[in-house]
Image (cartoon, rainbow, N blue to C red):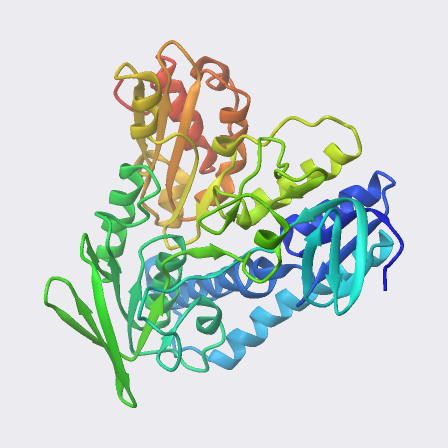
Length: 457
């Protein structure tokens, strides 16, 4: 059986898939959207949204525990994990209903089921074929593990960690990237004893080294243990706990092992290889306009090499819809995509790290770091951290890196500075409300522009 041809058939209803569907519909194109699970994908149901809900609950727990710092007599009596899940699920369900309503309003032909790309511009679902003038592949990602490390029981990935019915007493987190440090932050706030194991030399290794050092310092203050530059060699579990072995010879005992070693592209079993799609290490190769090697077949999101971020997939989905509609949009600049790790404290960045800038521009780059100790609102919040700028020789600011509570809310201005190729002199005259943390960005640019007011130039 073959369904009527649509302008665009989309395989995958996560951030990239539904963004493409909604934008294409707005542009007058007919759309078939195929999703095997729930509209919204990993980000809404098993990733971004539920983890950030847990992180906010963790922030509330810390506030209750530390009320006396602010002259507030508050008592932390513990975590009601059922209540936490109810709060988290309420947020997710409200957003899910909103997405369902938008899909209906945009008159999307929504198909539930597992789709297989069968070549040309056709996707098959349970024996029915859906052919479009164009096809978009957006099948997302899955939690990876290590060879010989089987998930199950006391060894879990992030999806299982989101639904635990208890707060573990002792946790080992395998992986010090974004997912690992976010869960470590949650569990530490909930009262667990946490140890992170990271094979690379520092936590959040994809960030600027400055950010890693700031986060590590904060984690030491919070008594979150971490072991960097050490490799995992094995794990054994029984009814009482899990034993984690390291290459150093050390053994860590815990109630739970969270495997947070990254996410892999969800491409196996969808027919991509068989249909002749060019692949690399499981990822779909595309050009800068997100075209695969097959005509009228595009790919977006976590299956395309690059940052695995929901907002990247979302913007790529919008791009493909506009490309198909003939609007000739500008390609998505990977370096201009903001990145946020929502731990306590947060790490936010956009653009190049200092090391990347030196590789690109040579040793004549300029950097400046502004400590949040000089920022009034940060002192009110009792958060520490800093803002670091990286400037090209005789050129614009090419990297912005922030560490501190709530700095993720500053990344909007930071990404405008980077994407509009602003010079420090362009930003310095802009007025930042007082007292806000955004003043830290203003002060840093003032200093780079030769006008240091609250710092020694």
